[in-house]
Length: 360
Image 1: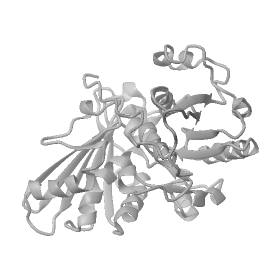
Image 2: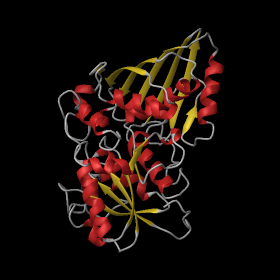
Image 3: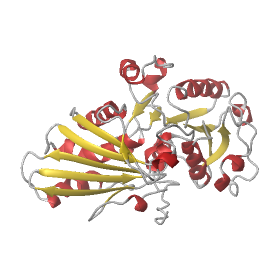
Image 4: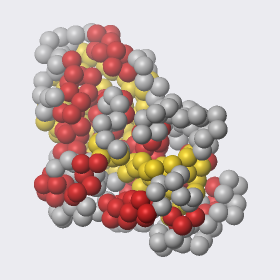
């Protein structure tokens, strides 16, 4: 459904699956400020019936009486025939099942549904790719053809009914890499270091990702073996028709939220920083949420916002592109709302123009 909506009067019901995790909490925060989406259910199997403010104290003022909904009964509260924006923040491997069940329930109530999923379950159009990376059969392979996956800035329109938002590392790397690949000015190998905050590891503490282990610490993990590298290669190829080799070294950073990516490549010929920056200005000049900075991008300038800041440095034939985003917003809930805005023919920036608090 791509017809323009009467934004002065319409409200679209919004439902969040897997609503008790960090990404789920960001969905609840952002939806509350959205001019069109209205939260109808924050769904959780483990915390059903519990107040949202008990799980997320920072949301107690905006959701004083609302409770988490049961996965089996949330749809009963929605009026038949309504428009529904369905967001899934459920984990990899579980999201596809949850989305499929929600779609079946919504169909019985004749709801007009659009889905944006933030897990990896719908990012690959080929089940073999998913299964080789995640080591299990895809639980809902027949749904794959109803989804597309791309960074919003790299995809015109909405080529399918539902969207799969790329991961946070993949979003930052693709934003930093696609203009180079599109212009064909660099070789086919990228060397990437990316540092992520502890919220990227989810809400449940684990050895090696728990914040006390990361505080005042910095270390690499899964160098050249991270499962998001194939996803990044696929994203860049979809956007540019070029298959690049990704040499990716992720790092665990001593901060709670944010992604900082450094992409290095060899140019085909010596260039000036302004030449390469011009490629990025051309690529993102009309994009609300991508900003080129004159110096070095900094995490504190984007944390808690949907903005990406990119900086470029060139010496001779060596180029470095730096990208800073918030992993929970631009890399997850915010980017997903961008897609949902587009799926419902709303202004893409609706509900997302809050800037960073900076001194976090």
